[in-house]
Image 1 (cartoon, one colour):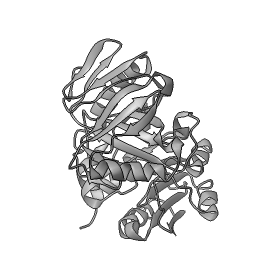
Image 2 (cartoon, rainbow, N blue to C red):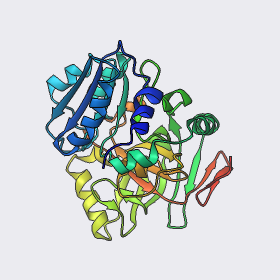
Image 3 (cartoon, rainbow, N blue to C red):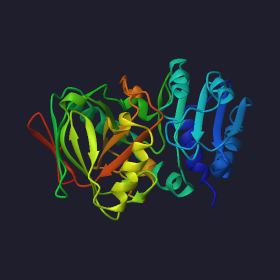
Image 4 (spheres, rainbow, N blue to C red):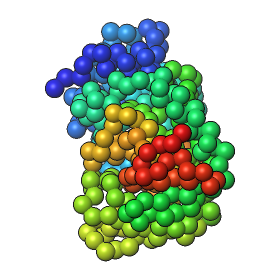
Length: 317
């Protein structure tokens, strides 16, 4: 199955705005190389300065790349990371962004996802983000509840996914493909309650059993009542106590995304919520560990400063 040329054109021309005089870098690994090659070959039709770099598969989301790759990331105007594990929350990516490079990071991206979730109405999405981002950005308290048992109050900082960043066509623009989330850093001392992940989680996929997390001052404690919960607890425990710190709250906004078990897409599903454990440096946080794992919650009710903006998974703004 090949990527539709229309999709490749949307990615490289509409979203990244790649120009003939710019350099372009694709970073991939063996499991994703075939898909990445299609992007690389299309890019060569636009610019002569295109390169593909195949790295060893990373062990975990947020792991730093090797030194050679990190240095390459500093030198290319436009970049696309199509790897099995995420380079998004790494110092190497952040350093490349500081240089002003335009970057898409798509860990776990599939052809089906590209052909289904990329050709969307970006003008509509930009309008939605302008409204929703302002509400989140200016909030003092966010209360999230679900019928499955989530009941947590939090506050956020450094809210991202500005409308300009949906199209990675400006200096220093960075984000995922497919796109579609309002994401923020967590104010941990104001984050307390219960999270019930009932949709999906990295390295597990679609959750057969809900995973309950008790949260006190932004630190999660997994309730070990099923095998999924035990696996998540084991993943986090292997990185120490700081892995249990919440680092992100996100609201999905992509109307063509669906729950597939692939977190890259799942966290973008319109009218879902996700919380992440681990590294929060991308949100000017302080938790510098090589781990960032997002869990997805479906059909949330979201109250921001007492006003309901989403009711059982339906946006009201």
